[in-house]
Image (cartoon, rainbow, N blue to C red; front, side, top):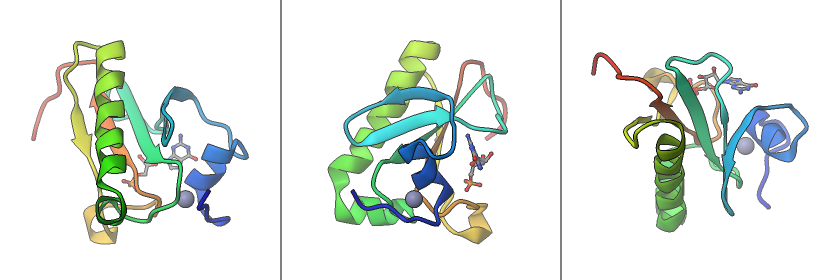
Length: 113
Ligand code: 5GP
Ligand code: ZN
């Protein structure tokens, strides 16, 4: 598996840093964000290390689809199937962890954009 030994999300996937698991598929892992912005705030990551979402899209479109499907499954399980999906890509967009991750916000009616 392609991992980066300096990456905190790779360490979470390996179990070296504890996390609250929400769901897992063959190629994705979903866990609770440490600093939740909604009733349910999951991070869905590919188990292989990619820095940005566009790298996943280019390398393996079906893996990006699997991330979206995992988000849907979380929203089905935890709420009514509705959710907000956010990928921050690059520092200027607010990306602080450079292992591609989808923020899944659900569990409540969400305000704002
Ligand atoms: P970004 O700003 O890169 O889009 O999102 C990074 C997210 O990772 C933030 O929402 C932050 O709360 C979360 N985060 C950072 N470090 C950890 C950690 O060690 N464990 C968990 N569960 N979440 C983390
Ligand atoms: Zn990583």
